Length: 429
Ligand SMILES: Cc1ncc(COP(=O)(O)O)c(C=O)c1O
Image (cartoon, rainbow, N blue to C red; front, side):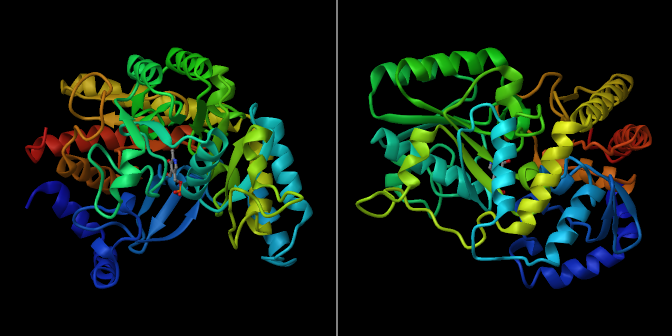
């Protein structure tokens, strides 16, 4: 049996046992496609700081970071204190409360383009509401988005060219899908048609920069959309409160009309928001003559536990060097891994900006489109890293936090070096 698989199975009998049970309950035995791993994922029992531990007692440096929500790491004391205090006061008032005001005030202070805030529970909901608001405001149907950019799993954004099973053709027809970074394509479409309501994108590029987008593209896109009175929606679900305290829009100095926020926004608890121009969010208002023109409900909108976690997290992002620390850790990982790649003499690159790193194992430049890496190789890289005590995100790559230490970085680079050796032994390089 290949060394990586053999070693992984030797270290994780408890995870295998749980996965056998899970396989009869969940599709693929998992509850999120990002957690899918061949032959089975690890089952985690505990997490603290930058580390987590599985049922077999193995400890990992964690780069999932709660799918990007945990910029302060696991169980940050400020977040735990705020949440614990709120739990004893009630978890759901079914009423307005002061924490939602403090939370929204912080967002408005930190995110340059946020005039109004509407809370949802997930980023998917916020992106769906953003698109609905844009169409309602513009009274136009078409949305431009870019291949590979992720905006959640709702019907308007979950398909690549040609549509997807379960998504009706009418919805597919109303989305114009362009290659990533194709400014000429955008200009061409906007010159040819006047039925485009908005352009939506991840401002740092697909999957937080896996296919990087530069500031110049964002400036050009802002100019092109403004010239044609087309709305610009930034999906800052990952980049928000990570690229800078005010997200990518503050870092690059490009103001969108609407912004989708989630993840760090609620400090690891469920919480998201669509924020932006007051006139575009106005159709959510009751009017003298009747109900809102754009409907949006939601049992858990701005529930107070998430609000407490969100406030505590945003304050840390605003008032400490949390982001600089996370950026530094990621830069060290990129540097160390690229050195290991050079020494090994393989055609790979580890790239990224800010607090992320992306491992691109099929070429020496960042990819220009997604899906170029065989899934089997991604699984082998992840398994190899797990065997050496590192849990990578499935891109493969990772998101650093404010509590990743120099020791964590060293362990990660060392794990990467050893994983390269094992991949070589297994004939996978
Ligand atoms: C850029 C981006 N947009 C939207 C979403 C969807 O957010 P959620 O998982 O909270 O629905 C994600 C989730 O990973 C994301 O990364």
